[in-house]
Image 1 (tube, helix red, strand yellow):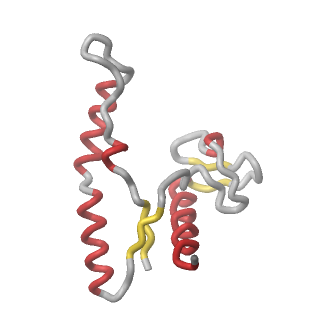
Image 2 (tube, helix red, strand yellow):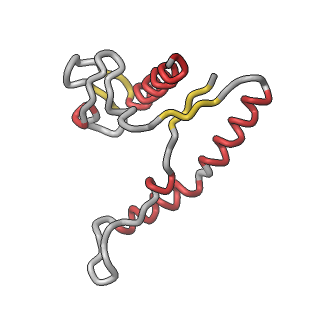
Length: 118
């Protein structure tokens, strides 16, 4: 069983807010980020992963991505303040610390297992 985040790439690559006359903030940076996001071919990777997993007799399950990197895997406290930096996670409730990517992966696993057991 493989669990992945059900990422909405279209939402992740939305245009920076603003008009032709009054540009939004960081439009150039957002444009570059959008290009990188769209170049990753995440849907194709997920499609291939699903195909190969089924071919080998396994299953792939996409779980909702909301707050996976903001929720503490120990106490389930969810807060924006748990992510003071892009890289580090520190729960403001219980003090648990870990790399933010590891926390996100732990939460995806937990959510996936909960969906399967339901």
